[in-house]
Length: 490
Image 1 (tube, rainbow, N blue to C red):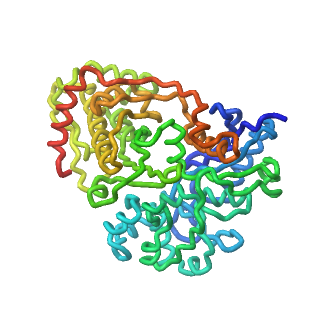
Image 2 (spheres, rainbow, N blue to C red):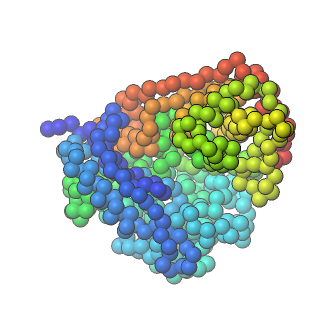
Image 3 (cartoon, one colour):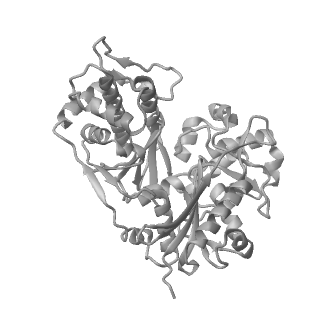
């Protein structure tokens, strides 16, 4: 009999729906992807939802193609991972009572701004540990309470979107802790739904049910799911959950190690055994979630990054495209010696700030565009160090390296600036599918192939390129101190 060495991962992202078969070495055996998109809410004008049935149909079609390309007897198990916060209220049969409100929907923005109506923001943050984003699940509960109270009255469970798909595979109605950890409705310290928050909202804590841990078995593929996905009846299905947590684990990060996901937004995260959620952390815009491994927390902070660099390239290098664009910008910036330019960028330039105080400082008629580009990269590196220092304080640890993944990790000048400014080595890994890999590792542990997710991860050969701090580190230490002085209070 063939070894059961493949995990099937249903990976649901905001732009793509994918089904990937991955083996115990972390290699993709087969994959299929299709576009994902939001829909207009048929029940609320201007609302934005996820059409779960349409998404499921796409995932099923992708699954059939993957199954046609592999030996089904090798499947150790199946799991699902998605973005956080979104889900739906369901009745006792698992039928949705209202569509899944998307995190992109603006209906919850005024709710978060007026959350003190139910609970003082600092008190809520201290309990939940989650930064008050408008898309948090709590705001959807409040919207439903204020606009569709009959839905709450009929609801048996609130199922996060991962669990909606697990229900379609197994019939099980149960949430996992990593998804619940994005809701702003948890007592983060206990990693359980908060009776305090539920009481303030006037809802029952049982709405989330008994939370499952990552790698716990949810059930088995049933007959209807076999017809729809071509995955054989009886294949075990395991809980994974929020894609961020599994991307961090899949990147190889251990406790107290930093992971930087660099794309349109930069997200700096650390896995920690402790966290803080005081007014200081709230002001620093830190958010804490439940880690994929029980008992740990994921502390994070995000800010706009490549998104602002794309704005820069459109306005300063409009004549160039593709690889030529990036190679030219980097070459121009490399000509600028550290500390030789008067150009600095106020980080409020790219912050999500209503004050709109951002500025490019030090411009003269002799300024070259390469100086400005380097100043943007330096400013982002300074912003990263601020975030790291806030994470270290909240988690009570001292970072020793940065694991960098995502599109921004391809810019070697930027990587060098990160290493110099933060005085930490930057580790670049060749594993591109960190979310899928992380989820697959929990399948292998849950199915008994590996003793634990960590043991499963130990079988993965991570090829790393390390960018170490250079002799310019001392220059950037002083420039960072100048940066902190100039931006104090912003």
